[in-house]
Length: 222
Length: 284
Image 1 (cartoon, rainbow over the protein chains, first blue to last red):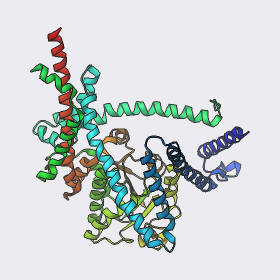
Image 2: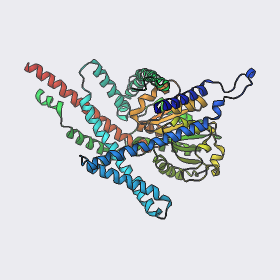
Image 3: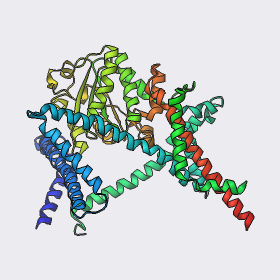
Image 4: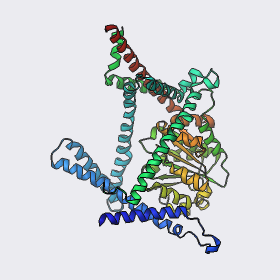
């Protein structure tokens, strides 16, 4: 029964957006010229979608808390990380929850430490580590074993040099078409665009098929 | 010699990390900016510059600044160079952070406040920061609502002042009052293109991380994107166009050393592979 209700809501939602999009803004004059009835309630439907989407945000923290509490209960590996997670979640939650109370000043200070101090520092550090990972990955992955890998490496080298001043300084005395920047731009605008479009068309086809299956409830039991 | 070179095939990754740290520290130590070469900027950068230059006085530029520390290294320079240009040209602008990160308004505010103060631009008259707009799981809905009625979608600004009380916002009610939408984030959503450009015909431009840029070239070629800033390279080129060197020009030095390190790693790996093959052939 529950499954049918979910499917019915999904189907009604899909039908609403399909009809709202397909039907013209105004009916023909011989029909009275009335406006698209679905468009009138578009705002309410959009707000409903946002509210439902926002509810989904709670799923993340709830699942994380459950998983970390379980780690602590079972005394599994990584308990320290679980304690850190729960501690920061609790402090962060309190800092935001106490914003409008008498403890406002303390809450504001805690919020500043967390969101202006620690969070940007943690974020910057973790993103900065990517530079090291990239170098290590380039060392291991870009090995010329075949023509394909050679082509990929060649284009990667041109793009890497073509998007920094060094590449320009190396070739700027050459005719425009032979400059690294021009070749890099050509690679990005022609072969890359063709590949991206092919991938996009394939992905859109897949998304359409998946959407239709979801909408019509085909294979939902699986 | 060949045997020695073959060892390059399996360098301990910690040596690579150390070499990367040294390479990235060079611009800090030497303090050198790499001068931009006297070449024509990438057409995507120029197009964005021209789009802003052509903004009529009765319209504004809407900037979606949805980045935080994760992509600060590139997005910050992009926002900075565009805002500096807008302030110099006295083009009014509205900033909003749609969906991606709640820290977006704070990061944007820090950058813009400083530049606007230097340029003598007043908050509320020349620029407005609408703050974060929660998008839930469906960013399309929020973008569409924003296009139809900015005031209803975001009734207060980042400092919780009612939007209707701000001078600039009395003139800006929907996408019809916007000349250009510029989305600066790690990876801007193409929904801006399908809704803003597709439904309302307002030009859209993106500022994205270098690593994400190949995906968006499709939209440049088709004319759906009117311009794009590609990482720090785009910011540096834009600063070259406005003749106001800033963070982009500064940070491109780090990108250059980083890219050189990647190239060195590729070279070492392949040299090692070639030497190992050769030594195997000689032994066999």
